[in-house]
Length: 131
Image 1 (cartoon, rainbow, N blue to C red):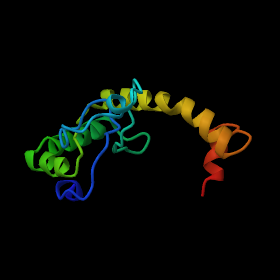
Image 2 (image 1 turned 30 degrees about the vertical axis):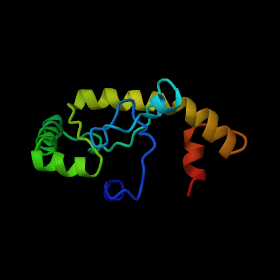
Image 3 (image 1 turned 45 degrees about the horizontal axis):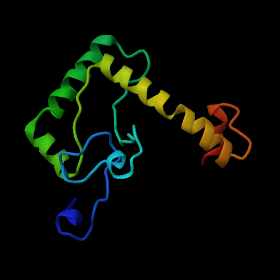
Image 4 (image 1 turned 90 degrees about the horizontal axis):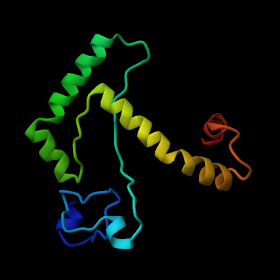
């Protein structure tokens, strides 16, 4: 964001479905181009190993959400153009399912057919072929 603030870089659009609080005057891709429903965002999540006890998962979730809700953490993220979106474990599972289904067609149709010239034969093949 420093380059934007200094006027050295101009943001043409943000790829999320809604405008970013960090740059509220910048339109979304959907607004700028008319591509309805365009929503591609970068996100990060924290995962625990399979079979982690539920009590441990819940405690981790509570502590991580507590940190993400701290004003200094939110401010630091905002200065970078990011937003914290604390979720429960159930909400995050639903979010992951939504994200997976959103990109499934793109991965199958574009990545597998165009980049691997003949299809993936399943996601396992794509993982093996990508260094």
